[in-house]
Length: 285
Image (tube, rainbow, N blue to C red; front, side, top):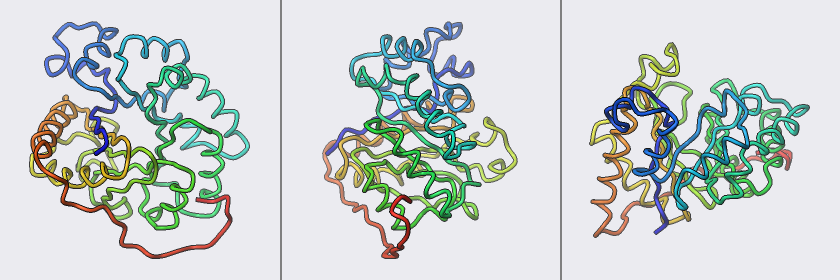
C-alpha cells in the first residue's frame, strides 16, 4: 500500500491557537509547530499572491526532511488565465516554488478551477496548454463543475500524468459528485465541508464552516484504501479551516484510518462506471 499523508489547507490561522498552537504563539513559528504533528500542508496563499522563492526556501528549511507541500495555483492561472498569458504567469509561478521542488518537498501544484469554468473546447484546450507549462512539476487539477466528470477527461489526465483532485463538498446541483479516482502517480482528496446553506452565498470562511461527524469521515476510509492500491502517495487535505475544524477533523480521520487499516486489508475497489468516450482535438483534456 502507498503512503497516505494527512494535512490541512493553510496553517496560518489565528483561531487555531489553543487547538494546534499554544496561545500567544508568533505566526512566524506556526509552520514549525504544524510540521511537528502533520507531514503535509497545502499552501493556499499563492492563489492571491505569486509565491516568492525566498519564502519557499525558508519554508523548506524549517520543516523536516519528509515534510511535503502542495501549493495552490495563482488566480491568473485558473480564474483569469488565457493562452496569451499562461506561459508568462506559469514561469513566474514556477520560479517562486522552485526551491520547494529542488528540495524534494513539492508534492503537488494544485490548479483549482472555479464553477464557472465550464467543459467546452476552449477550456479543454486551455487545460492542456497550462499543463504543458509545468513539465516535471507534479500537477493536480480540481474541477468544481460536474460537467468535467467524464471518462474522456480522466483518460486525458492519465495520459498527462496529472492528478485528479477528489472532493468532498455539498451535494448541490452542478457540483462534482464524490469520486475516489487515481489518474497519476499520486492521489489527492480535499475536504471542503458540506455547508449547503453558505456554499453559494458565503465567503471564504463561512463557506467552509463545517465540522465532519465520525460517520461522515468513516465513509472515506475504504475509498482512501482503494486509492492507496493504485498510487505511490495519497494526499488527504481538509479545507474547513474555520474555528480549527480542519485540525480536529484531520486528526480524527488520521487516527481512524490508522486504527482500521493496521490489521485489515482493503476491501473496496476503485472503479469508474462510465464507458462514454469522446473524440476531439488531441490538445484538449
